[in-house]
Length: 325
Image 1 (cartoon, rainbow, N blue to C red):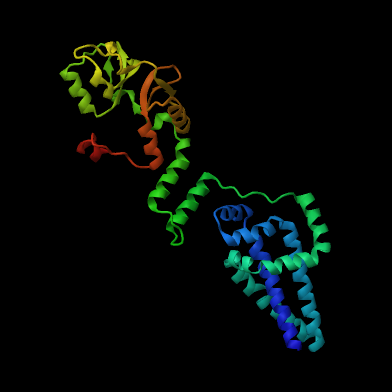
Image 2: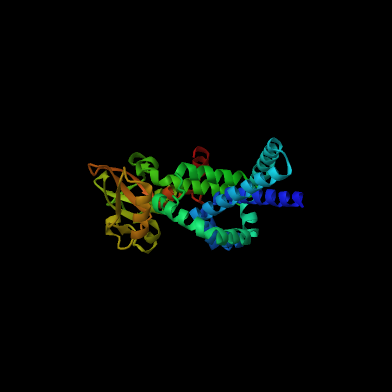
């Protein structure tokens, strides 16, 4: 009988110890996310875990009570020194180390399976645990939420991609990394500089030479200037040239030239420019410096390439462009 009682006390000691570490290691934010996505174990544990100080106080009270009872009980069946050695060995090995090592690894599963026990001891110790928990709530407040920096999030994503237990693949890792970084990059870093921009004077005639140059450029939107290349006055939409008359100048077109174009600064961040493009429904923007001088152009494609961390290849890209990109 003595051995059976000792065994029950050791099991209870291990259960209290393991649940203290296991349940309190579960982050309430993570549990909430899991619960929203249908995780039954998280849904079971979350209501109890949310009252963290009450849960902590209850489990510690139970653990202390069981360990004290075990030490006293062993003292009745063995000498003082021997009882102390036996109690220490049993509590450390079977009441602390083993249960904490096991339950901490399977906290969600084990916690959900023993939630009936946790609720029972909360009920039993409530008169003592509740006042202590309320004091902790008052002085310590709610548990601090766990937040991560962008660098930490990128590391987490990479760790998930490398883990066999995650369904994140390399493409998703690359895109997520790009999405987390692109808002820190400026327009000047990814734009096409002015000296590499293909543009035309507004007085350029819509003749065969012009159409050959447009076709060779491969672009669907081209800056149009007046007098000098830095004096941009509009954006030419190549697809709309099909409805225009032959041999008229660009400035005489009715549909193809859009004079109300989007302008951004070189120091603007890409996320800001992306928002402007989406709101204005523009796929290209003229870039100017603080002195309002033309310094380049940036397209929606340029920003998307930064997000997906990969060049977008279309049918107009030549083999030479691909080899030098």
